[in-house]
Length: 141
Image (cartoon, rainbow, N blue to C red; front, side, top):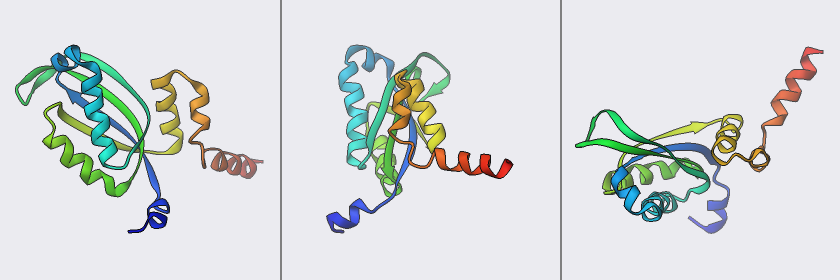
């Protein structure tokens, strides 16, 4: 695949929640978040926002862990990168479990705003967010 072909691939908007060992995160937060970012970088993702979300006791034991930290990441990535993310998370000693959800631009912008606390961040990825709303308003008149 040439470089020109790689740029024409459509990037989807994703939210990833990574359950990590809270003890490892407490000892080395930069290394733990760096390991998650390395996984996404290998998959060709562009991280828009990231943040540790919730640290505490899990509802049930997961892979021998009773405590964990949920780390949220909003990112853009071609759909083909999902297999890489899945494989790298299974091989990682940092990530216990992961969940990745594909979002619409409106929901993605809301999540980025919630993670960063910056309302201007939603303007960066509003490629088609405004078009459907104005079309619906015009039809209602």
